[in-house]
Image (cartoon, rainbow, N blue to C red):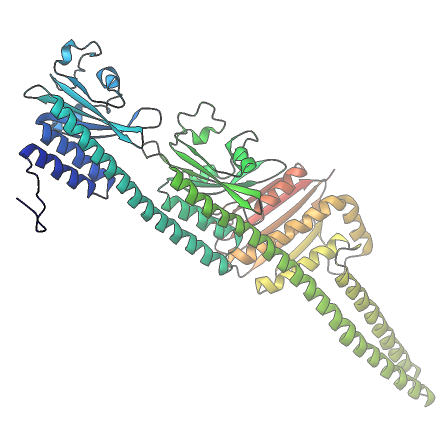
Amino acid sequence: MSDPVGYPIPERDQEDGGLFDSALALTSRLDITSALQEFVESARRLTGAQYAALGILGSRGETVAFHYTGMNAPDVDKLPHPPHGHGVFAEIPTDSPLIINDLSTHPAFEGWPSYHPRMKNFLGVPVRIQEQVFGRIYLADKDTDFNDDDASNISMLASAAAIAVQNARLYSESENRAAWIGVSQQITTALLEGTDEEEALELIAKKMREVSKSCTALIVLPSVGDAWVCEIADGLNADEMIGLEFPPDGRVQTVIREGSGVVVDSMTRTRTMRIPELRGYGPALYAPMILDGAGAGVIILLRSRNQPEFDLADLAMAESVSKQAALALELAAARHAQDVAAQIDERAAISRDLHDLAIQQLFATGMQITTIKDDLEDKGTDPEVLDLLNQAISSVDESVKEIRQIVHRLREPDANVVLVERLRREASVARNSLGFAPSFVISLDGETLPPDVDANTVTQIDNRVGADVADDIVAVTREGLSNAARHAKASSLAVTVSVDGGQATVRVADDGVGLSPAQSRRSGLSNLAARARRHHGTFSMVPGDGHGTVLTWSVPLI
């Protein structure tokens, strides 16, 4: 027999043809699970064994996956777990087959568990991929003895299975890479659209969890002092993870210092676990958020115990996307600086308008009134009318002086300005971002201060609060107003700043959409908590009565 070109084709016997067909069927599979099942069934068919099974080994030599054929459903239901690889299984060499035609006489045979079917003979063959044992195939209960031809055929079939596994892995990696690239594009689009820091980080955590087939994703960021805290969480037990503090000598800090990620085979088997909340998970991946050579945070992906381990391809793609998370933080900081610059520019524009327009017009009006008064005085006009004109001129002069003081404060916003004035300025500036004027109340020892509060009361507040706490009160008020403007979608907002006895309290309440359960402590909220802790105070952000959100920040006055 010859092919169409004329070259002779060697004849194949039935056994060789079966092996060739089985190997061809194996290597054409692109799904690793179906390829391995095909391998097991082909091995059983080629040898005529009653039972065939393939144990996939993990990094510690344990069986992490098990494919079988030949057992009936009742026997399968009796098996509590895949074989551990002890006894006869442990005798299989790493580079050659093992034939045992009478199991009961082998020294390593440990007997049969009550739930296991009895088997008389056995063939075990290692499955090697790139010089490492990927798994072992077990064949048992052939009507006749296993022989060298069986061992040779299954060894060749194992080589074909290794090629099939590699092909399936390459195909899976290409699909995973495409999925990661798609996630990267979505994140890039969100950043270019101006998505704020918190929303961008939440999107990154969600998409990375989904594309990596993880059950939980955490984003750990720097907090107070040297602490690193989980600020963003998505997936299983996300609410319990937010706020977890990671130790300074743990994996998070190691990843930050070294600037490269790590893969953990199982959090359950980790000898030292400083965070009990993570012990229930299986494989884990730590990817650093690096920007300009500095670590800005760490993204942790967690899988359940029965999920496969992360591989180096997963780590490479996760590290790439984690850099975009660092970029989100950088963009948020840049936008904040831009907002501050815009406020400074706005104050400068207001001061110019007040100086160039309002003062000049008032000055001209005062000159006109003075001229009229002089003319009337020459004509002997009633003294009462002249007194009224003098009062009008004095009022214009006072108005000019007050506007000049306002211009000076706008040009130097924090220079020697009392706390009351700084707080009122924050409320005024917030009108633009809110779209309406917030209610703003300042109270001292239970008494609400009037708009024209006297200088003694203002000085008393400054003296009791102190410069350090005053700066934090202004920052907390600013952040509360800003957070409501960006997230609350509110139509009204009330700010109360009270100095009562030995306590200073800031309360910001809105009637917006309320606090989302998934919302983390970002958007400056972790900073507010840090400011409270620095003064041994408290911070909370809770749902309001029926709707909206109430932010409360309170510190003792020492």
